[in-house]
Length: 130
Image 1 (tube, helix red, strand yellow):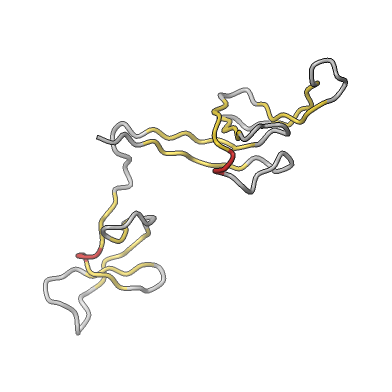
Image 2: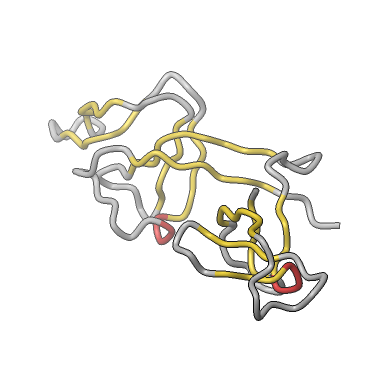
């Protein structure tokens, strides 16, 4: 099962219930992670593997064009790099294209990406806040 530390925004991790240690608190449930760390049920918040209703996920590949002006693009289908002519100047720029939808994102989210980088596979989860 998945759990995260209560009161944190940390990533969920796998835990497995274990028997109460000899020096443990009676009636508490104990869990261990893959690294052997032991937690009581009071410090863990259990996370469902089933997404909450109205949660949307977008999966795709992020790219940066040669003259992107601070934008990165999330393509829902695998993109390919093509050379596009710049008006009638005779110059070309490298542009990533795909047959899917391309969402514009802030390039600051992906500082490691350049126009020479291979597309980066990501997933974005959108959760409504009540």
